[in-house]
Length: 221
Image (cartoon, rainbow, N blue to C red; front, top):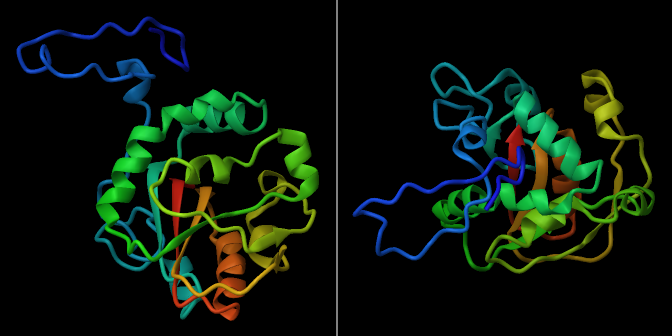
């Protein structure tokens, strides 16, 4: 078996602790695993930005009583994950989603979210979906043990990666709502940067009847 990222052979150490366990389907070598930094330290309780003492960050203070109640992210953004995400999203290497599966599912289960909640992946525009051939947020949602709903529609817009921070913070709402929704919502997306996209989505979902909206994202930018 070889690492999905660097193609190095994965060699498992056998010891008395794992000799009689079922084999795990390892997808990354130890070196690549060490490049994926889980968020574990003090962080803003609203958006998962790392802070010195776990206090509310300046962005969340500015949001105030925002429609998105909180965001939980799994990894810290770094150059390694930047490259993995680029190859996965923009160069169509879909199998790389398996790199995140174990950690993404484990952290989600620890949240103990109500079984009444539904997952809402952030949608792509039709043009962007045609370019990529898949929606990365839907791929992440499929890893999780809750029903998925698609009440949002996205109109065509410039790529987020091409926008400045100011442009992201001042952009108009890129979504429209398809239907009402009565369940608590967990929005799913790959990267939380300014939070503007998720706030736009949460606003419409709240207006459509969702009693609560939070988000679960792969990376905190």
